[in-house]
Image 1 (cartoon, helix red, strand yellow):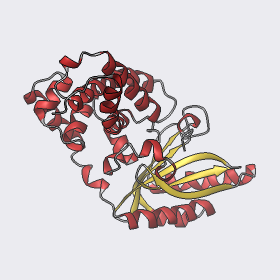
Image 2: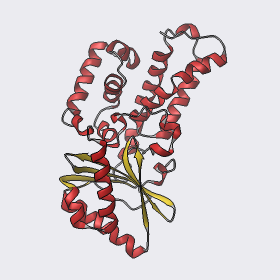
Image 3: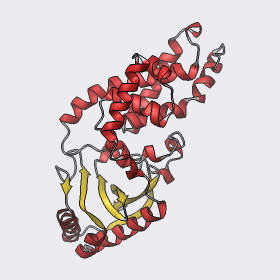
Image 4: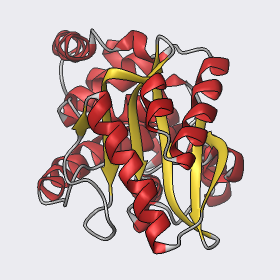
Length: 296
């Protein structure tokens, strides 16, 4: 249990001790750096206003605040996402270039783009309970107090969430060497418009996701199947050639895994990540919405 010390500077120090944890929870809950930072700031404002006598554990109290804020935000965000143009993808974090906030994100498999996309299947409450239990290792008694549910209820919610994700969990255990190799092969095949090369590395049931947010060109629905995805990527390459665009590819760490920054005329155009399973690319995520590329 962490005692709360008197004085504004001491309270700031107490808060900063858990700032990275709060950001890590909020980013995984919301899939947005900006929204996660807003939730951390709002948590700090509420933390300043509460009586010290009312706080038994700083960590538990702060975690409860940010969890509830994120649940409320997600419930409103889901309405916004229903109106979003095309597929919605989380905002990527380029690991190698972001000392802040990546230093806060406590990198692990639970930061992978594919995992964050998978969490979209859960309700806000399911997501909160699942993350607090499976990623941040809180006990059900603590989680119950944070989300204002009984421990038994939280166990059921966590069980339901695990069932939703049961068949997907092993997907995030690809060896880094395999991820890097397939990423490099993808860069070469896509960069040359090599249809055969793409088909050699794509899983038969590969899915292509492209998030343009209605602001730039992107596929309005996920594409599925190796032939369809490879054909679409070849068409993108051909279109870029006709427009005279020279697309530069840089292999970087994105959300803790090997990914790609694509730039045109020195401006980042696309952040791409690949989900690799059994030495084949199972999913491709292209984030093209300019609002989500500002921190890359």
